[in-house]
Image 1 (tube, one colour):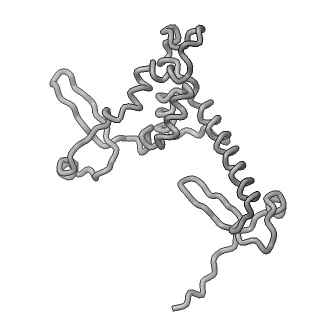
Image 2 (cartoon, rainbow, N blue to C red):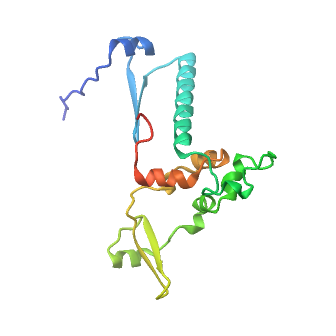
Image 3 (cartoon, helix red, strand yellow):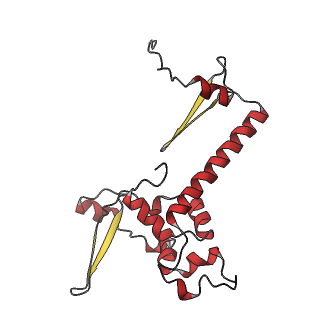
Length: 187
């Protein structure tokens, strides 16, 4: 069966076409991902591809800097006098996160709560749901429930976490910003 539906046209301002070097003969390719849409020429020469790679790299740098500024540097949870940021230069940014127990724990996958699927099913919790735990010292009981927050630092790809940690960015603040879902870019 033939589909007579046409795809909706996307109208871009003429200035954008000129800036991008697009012309009316170009076929455009859309690349969509979570929270992202990139429009490229459908066919490119080597130098055009180099220009795209350069622009995407610049954008990645700009976005990483915005995230880093929002998180700030790791200061061992406010304990700036712990020696982690000494003036001797011995402890660089890569050591700041390592010296902070909270940030270091966020990188430790062994701290993730794992409950067998049959117990989750018995509790009416879907497999793969984020969990959180709380402890009651008085009765010696740990309660595991569905996490209130849909996203947390575990949703950040490992490569990005590594770059941020090695740059001394506060991972605890990143985790908080993710969970609070505050706008940190484009304010």
